Length: 82
Image (cartoon, rainbow, N blue to C red; front, side, top):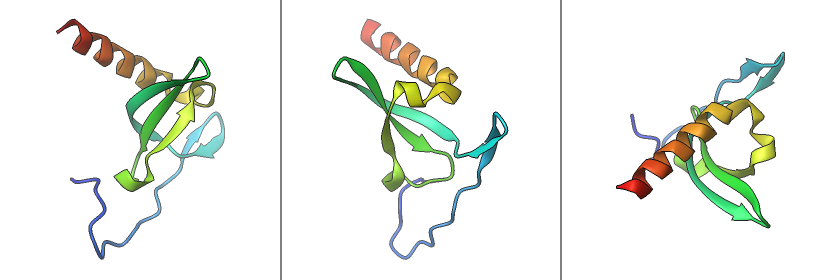
């Protein structure tokens, strides 16, 4: 299934998931990282969103996605070793 926007494609609102008794959107995947003023910022794909909706966010706002952040860091370290 492609996440790219196709001309004429109907945009469907993503569903919310309950996290800590609050309805929130779920991160599907961490795509990139950069440091802004010495603090990590992550580029992420939101579950059920198209690539056009990918966004950057600071680490302190991603407390519910730490497993994905850790997996992204592991993937980057493995690529650096190769």
